[in-house]
Length: 277
Image (cartoon, rainbow, N blue to C red; front, side, top):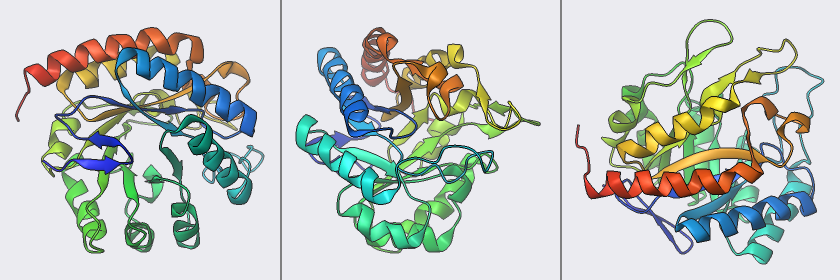
């Protein structure tokens, strides 16, 4: 297995659980710091590792009218502020090769969106930055196809890779999460992440935006962590119903403490009795 070092954190499928959490879309510096601060406290209390996530650009919104975010320049200022004030690593999405080098100057983890996971030039540009690369498995891709994605990044000399499951297309506006994909992707040797909130998304399900079933996000998280994985990805917001993006999937911030505490209990059991497939 490959462990991946992210700042002071050591991330691996047999290491203590990492929680990647934050709002879908960065809204303001104060808002991001509020969520990052609360999540840092929650994770510290539960004994979990923590990375803050927030997107400066939601380039794959369902509708042209969908709010896209703060933009790269302002978003990177917000993320740098999180690092300075909270002291945790940060993660954000990238969508174009021209963003990779600039974003990597600030951000610890560059995330490749699921729709772009086979875009060779983007994977190569991201890998060449030397940053940690988190690739979300496309809704259209089988988990046993992910070694091809890994090979593209490895060709740059970068072996700081995370692989994320976020569900597979299952008919119109519907996803299904196959838990077999987690140990399958773990066969690459790289840390595996479960995206608990996007896996309950209903893509385009509200016509001009995506719907979701947030009540099942904790179910996805608990199922995945009980297998024994490196990390869980959870989007959270203090008022999901008024969030500018992906509100129907997000877990309310005031519920995160209890959830992370329970996840750490599942993680301890899984790591003490590891499964090998």
